[in-house]
Image (cartoon, rainbow, N blue to C red; front, top):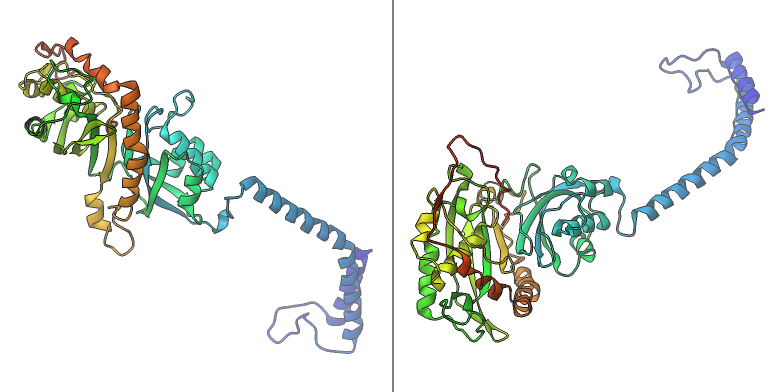
Length: 427
């Protein structure tokens, strides 16, 4: 009925008005005002009204269906999600702090659920908060994710930095943290350039290693004596030995599967020193800080391990110079419990973009109070309580006598032989 009415109305218009052409000055319907217009207009009005009534039920159903679909999409997205079309996707960096106890390091092992990592919890929180789509959680390359430094099993961080692309939702830090356990916190967020990569743009990394001072007691002393206090003379000797690490050295003996001929075994240490000791819960602790361009797997733990072996009297001081030569030296590895990534440095990036009026410098000055509070609340207590109950340092000290620091074995590796290298920047 509606179609025939429309055809009749169209025929009436053609008879009355003639064919339409878009010449200037023509009427909207292509006809000149005349008496026949009244009858044509009536026919058109009647046909359109009938057609509207015929299609009204379908249109109302379509609108109802579309509204229901939109509501269903909102329910599936969750309470934290916002309409994606309104959210800009931007490259940012996150300042991350975490206690590494109970985790198998920072880097995620996709497809392996038995070894839980910090990134497993972090990526899950990013998805749940609505910062990234769910399919990006399965492949972090889709969001250009990069951590500044890997951390080993049990190692903590007070100033880890990761870079990625996210949707800048409202209250983003609060929403991410609401899906994280209390021992993992996002302490800061900054916008960065589109091509920023937190690992490649990092100039240096600062770690600290916290240990009970009885680790520096002479080997004839009781290794479990919590009443031991570090003397000024011993502290001075410790700092004298740590200063030897400064500069560029061949650290092939301080990691695994690296030969002395590999260029990547040469690392530059900017600074290394031991701070004044302090007492917590009746036990004295000291903090060794080390700043370097980058570190290899287990490098810092072995640097601390060899230092302790020398101070305790198990190894001669000459072993330091020998360890940087081609000979293979037995270097002990200190426990991972006390190692903490304190901060990462972006001096070159800050010089170029920090004052361009568009980006903030990556110095985290405003977040310093939050970093300090996290260390006091989660990192220091974990190290102290674990040392008290599990005695990781005391047990490791008891293994030092089995190391032979005087024996040397030249590597049977020629200059043209390639030795597989472990991941870098992973201490």
